[in-house]
Length: 158
Image 1 (tube, rainbow, N blue to C red):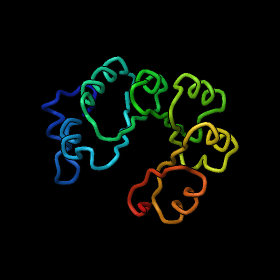
Image 2: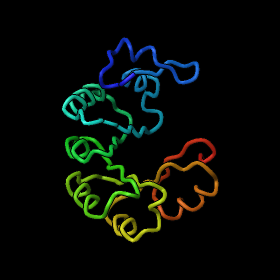
Image 3: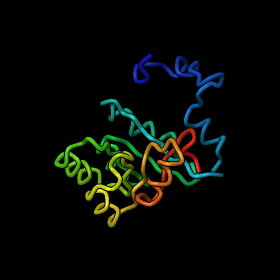
């Protein structure tokens, strides 16, 4: 199933394990501002629909949250939100420079493989750097020194 071509009814039947995947509104109601949220938006070339839909979904939510994406236009288009640019380690230096300047992000979320690189250290002096995806205690120990926040799963959790 392709998410961008699916109806809300079709998406409402998707599951992770035995749990239905909540809509954004359901997730925000469940969290109710009790913990910060970091929402990664994967636009798959359909940015024109994502921006207004995301703004509608987040309208009125008072809890702490940030929005991040690999797409530099999405980060730039949401100045009212705390926004980040997700950067893969293999992204070339010229494209990375262009993306960062286009997005003007509040933070960067970098591939953990990029930690320790000179460009990450330079960016960290300008804005917070988060690192993804931390999956083990060893990765967590290394990343904790070179990033301001960790995005983890499985045994990478604190």
